[in-house]
Image (cartoon, rainbow, N blue to C red; front, side, top):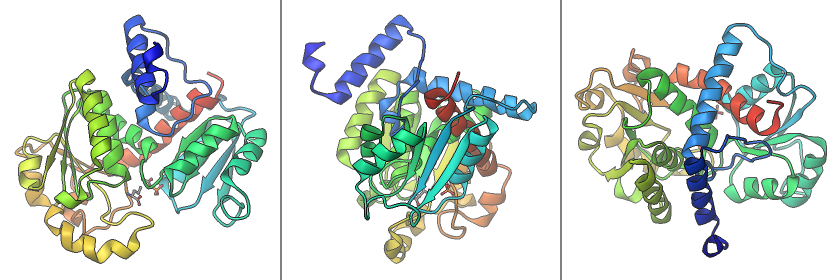
Length: 338
Ligand code: CP
Ligand code: NVA
């Protein structure tokens, strides 16, 4: 164990190995959810199973009490429909109290440091959701608040979205391992990064189709390749979208300019036009049953055409609903009474 002591990645990999070997029971109490890198294959599987049972529970009209007496802070420095609503409704469904803290409501990063804000909120709340720009901010909140912190999107990662995406894949195909999953478009944004990590963890054959300038950062690719060796996943990069999608079970895309980089839109449109998900690209999969996914909101006419978005292959609203059940699973397993 000694040789692993100074490397967080290796410690986590060693722990995952022990967890797998001895089939230790899963217990996520007190854990933060900052990136899927911190979670083992079994822990992700556990969160997906829990999401499904919470979905069934809600459908059968049973009101939960897993967050009874708990107060949850929801910090948003960027706008949100799905993530905000999913955290709010999930919290209320389980008897908790959500408090929305918008970018003009609190002093975070302006009049008060992240470290001080973390220590104040940690004394009042039982869990903190953060959506914003820098990954370092969500990490600092987790370091100093003393309560579970959940990443509701940063420039680098969007891990709660991946749980919803994978639950949707599982519902459609009955499995994750071995699926052929192709992400088309801006290959270095928070969605591409997080889908690559999640796929590596879950044994998915993941491809990114993007212009070379928009491939993900080399260091992250290497980390994911190392994870993939343990799970049987493969990770490949293509500049030709038609070649990339051949045999795909699912195609995923996202906006061409993420929140905070709106000034890059014109240049991205020029670069990414050949990467639009349209009916021709769906046909190029050779699989009529290939599904279409998108984290939303979508810019129809850019990354996806209206007809693909509205087609029966499109599962975007199932995926959107799954944000609720998966976010609930994250909150109740890390900060709830289960
Ligand atoms: N997919 C997603 O995170 O949507 P919002 O930006 O609406 O939260
Ligand atoms: N890449 C997008 C995801 C939105 C859910 C963004 O960051 O704006």
